[in-house]
Structures are given as C-alpha cells and as structure tokens.
Image (tube, rainbow, N blue to C red):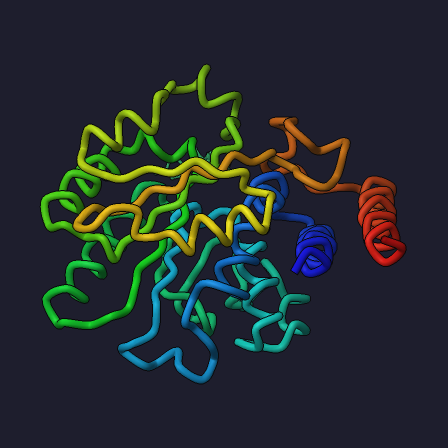
Length: 272
Ligand SMILES: Cc1ncc(C[n+]2csc(CCOP(=O)(O)OP(=O)(O)O)c2C)c(N)n1
C-alpha cells in the first residue's frame, strides 16, 4: 500500500500535466486517505457497485477528483487509459466528480454538499435496516459552508454512527491558509459540541489511518469524525505547503523533477 501511494501520486501528476488542469496540492494531500479507504476499508468494488449493500464513499472536496480517478482506475472501475481524456472536450472525466464515471457515488464540487448527502444516505441505511457504512471526505477550507453545520447537527440528532466524515486537514485552501481565510478552529471541539465523536490521525501514516478506521464507530450512537492531519502537495517537496499548488499545474521540468523525486522514494523503499 505504501508503494501504491507513491504510484498514485505519480499518476495524479501525469494526468494533471497531460490535461494542463487540475487540483494538484489537495489531490496529493488526500491520496493516502483514499488508498486506505479503497484498499482496506470500503466494501466497494466494480462487481458490487450496484448492490444496495455496498459502502458509500462521497468525495465532498470534489475539486481533487484526480486522486479519486487514479484510485478508481486502480480498482478496475474503468480502464486507466480513459484518464488520458481528463478535461478534454466530450470526456466524462471532468474536473469534478460526476456519476457518469463508474465508481462515483455523487456529483460534487460545489463545496458543502457531500456531508449533507452522506447524512441522508446514512439515515436511509438506518431506516432500511441496512448494514452499509457511509464515508465522506471534506476539505478544511470547505468547513465554513453553512450546510456542513446543519448536516452535523442532523447526523447527531439521528444517532448516525454508521457515518464517518474525514477532514483532509492540510491547513490551506484556495487563496491562503484556512486560519486567514476563515478560521474554523477548534474543529474537534466544535464537532464534539454538536454530538460527534472525534479522532485525530496523521493522514499520511497508512498504519495509523488503518487503526483509526478500524476503531470506527468511535462511540455508539454518535457520528464519527476523523481529522486527518495532512500536507498540501505531500510527496513533492517543492509543492508542499505552498498555496499556489492548489490548482497549479507543473511545467515539463517541474513534472520531471516531481517524478524523479517520487521514483527515488520507490527505489529507497525497494532497498529497505
Ligand atoms: C460553494 C463553493 N464555493 C467556492 C468554491 C471554490 N473553491 C474550490 S476549491 C476551494 C478551496 C477548498 O479548500 P479545501 O477544502 O481546504 O481544499 P484542499 O486544500 O483540501 O484542496 C474553493 C473555495 C467551490 N468549489 N464551491
């Protein structure tokens, strides 16, 4: 899985470079979370995707769909070859998730919609006596959307312990840090006061992520929130913690440098 995370990063960069468009920094910050979700946690596959029993994953931070595309391709939802059409005329592989792409649960991209949809989906599971679980990934810069707080209130009201929200807490958003643009700290105390059970984790530590997901639900009758501490641009040193890589696209040299750095990491891993 550690190798996969690096391969996924290379692919994210390759398809964004090829499309000359995409959300690079936030895709690199959330891809370890997606790796653990799709390769360990979720009961979702191309074979069971139309089954009502499948787990649901809704990517609320829809702009980083490139990370989701490379993981879904790896899981066999569609041929990876399709991603060469990313953002091209008439391609369904556009810059935000759409249900026209196999494996995508919900159209998202307008921030603040994933959590409300996830709450409704988790409530439906309870009403229908279904065992599936619902996961949704939010950006920390997404939290100021008011709809999240209505959803947070509702999730606790209906005791939705089959719901797990994850915040990709990379501390940056589109034009600056989340602190400067709209400070939502302390996120844990706010959600706890709404009736949620909250865990913190290093969002790049695959073992820690696995342990945290394994311990969900964190409290009976309470929706769970995982605050995943991450680095925007993780894995490419010149992109890390730099707001300009929110939707920056590497030029040819930057792309080659990034691949070389990631290949070095793969080599080091092989020699260990
Ligand atoms: C309702 C809405 N308002 C504004 C935007 C424009 N927008 C796209 S990404 C973004 C910042 C999101 O920050 P964050 O959720 O922290 O993303 P990450 O850093 O994880 O990429 C904004 C404001 C949007 N997509 N939807």
